[in-house]
Amino acid sequence: GLLRADGKFDDALAMLDAAAEASPEDAASWRRSAALMLFESGRVTEAIGRLEALLAEDPENADVRHELVTLLNQRGFRFDANEHVRQLCRQGKATPDELRGLMFPTRSFTGLERKPSAEDVELIRRNGALNVARAMYSEGDVVEAVKVLRDSELVKKKNPAAYAFYGMALIESQHFDEFEDWLAAVPESARRYPAYWLAAGGWAMRQRRFDIAVGQFAEAVLREPGDLAAIDRMTQALAAGGHQGEQERFRRRGVLIDRLMNLTREVFGAQRIDPAAVQEISALLNESGRSPAALAWFRIAIDQMGSPAAAVRQLDQALAMTKEQEFRNNNRIMKICGLDLKRFPSDFDFAKAGSVENTTTD
Image (cartoon, rainbow, N blue to C red; front, side, top):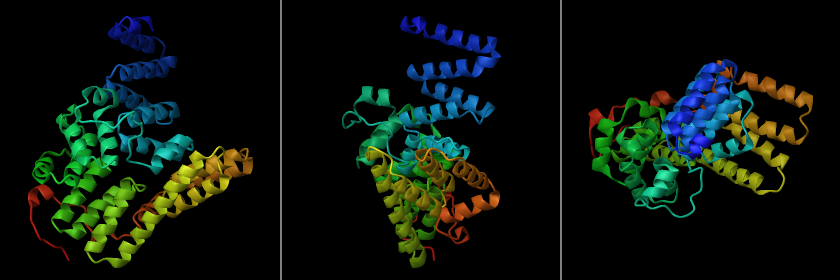
């Protein structure tokens, strides 16, 4: 503590690393402390990297995973945080706040005291460029979000999460020339993120390649099935392509997600958790192919009832079933409302295809 207060940060960090080496049985705790100290000092990438290394060695370490969720959310890396929450759901260890985050999967997780400006360097430094850009995007200030990301070290260094979000913001703000440059430069690692597929789908829509757009949006929905914006884009693409049956299924899914968000607000806005509302949330999540999250919410309801042994045993059995491949395959189909992906390819090289106006795919 004194070393940190005196500004002798590297010395303090070295002491924590030495303690981890000297005490193998307590090494994880020392290494975790070092990671948190790095985060507090602004060395975010190093901090997250250290926690991820700890988790790679011990994937069942829920404490480290909770810590990662918090840090990633604070800096705007929502999808990475959500992936950890989904794993916590599978382990039966997700917290209510983490489950709430899954219901609003793309919004800035940390509220900003005032409306951010692209010129507010200190606010961006303190809150993180990606987090600030998310806050702007959520409020409809897409052009400002582009400015923040364009000037950020994250985009300059092609951080995959930030670069994917940057592409989505470019297409949304109609920076089409800049988007073509983005297409030519985007790293392969960005394809992990829903924002990449939303960007690609938006570009396909502009090119009037509607079935190609459906394939891109499907990839986004599979990754982040609770993103209402992704569902809405999918519905629009299906309508434009003349696929009325599929369009109606996704329209209904959008209604379901809206209901889930409203129920979540009700649950967290009440003085006491309403078991009936939690059970409805669980049922709707299960209906939309999100069984691990459904069971995590059901666990909240059981906790409210005093965790009767029979109910806990039944819940653990259901959770074990979600790990079976057939079960996961069925959930995958449910997430995209039974859409036949063979009809809607996602494997399309936009950079090679170039800009083709007024092109349709039948």
